[in-house]
Image 1 (spheres, chains in turn yellow, green):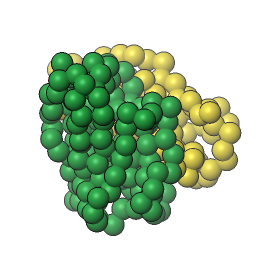
Image 2 (cartoon, each protein chain N blue to C red; image 1 turned 135 degrees about the horizontal axis):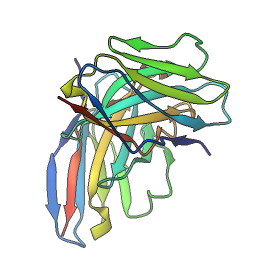
Image 3 (cartoon, rainbow over the protein chains, first blue to last red; image 1 turned 180 degrees about the horizontal axis):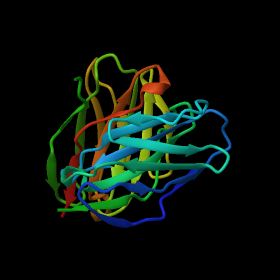
Length: 115
Length: 114
């Protein structure tokens, strides 16, 4: 069985600061995908960034980047120049079943950006 | 940008009643999913659907639940004889054949069982 662990239930930073959210995972598959989803108070699930396991280069999307350490099974999300609109729940998710059994989510980290 | 559409956004139902949650996936997507998120908890996989049949289902997806793709566009989740603990946010998601593009989620249906 695959698992995803997010060890930070809540984090709070000042606007414009950089923040890193942690995620570790476990899977026996050699090929898999990792995702970070953002869930604002509206509760919609919004894809932030994705990483393919066979790619060594860390994914980046504007202010969002990941630090993917495959050997350590670690997949952290870095948000640079944080903005008030980044306040949300952030979920790390793993897809290692070829899509048949969907995504396995972590419990989430509630990120609060203070003005 | 294409969206996954879910209706209704909020449904209140009496315990014991049947509810049908509706989803319109993105038109060229081939894989469809239902997830559940009980308030304050993580998102849980319920079922995946491909080629007009269930691909996988979790242990949560028991005989109380069923899914259907009645036409070329809609994808429904039926919950029979609802219980208080079925109160949750239900998300539909879809994805393309190519695995790498990830999943697109709908905005969810908040189900409240009273």
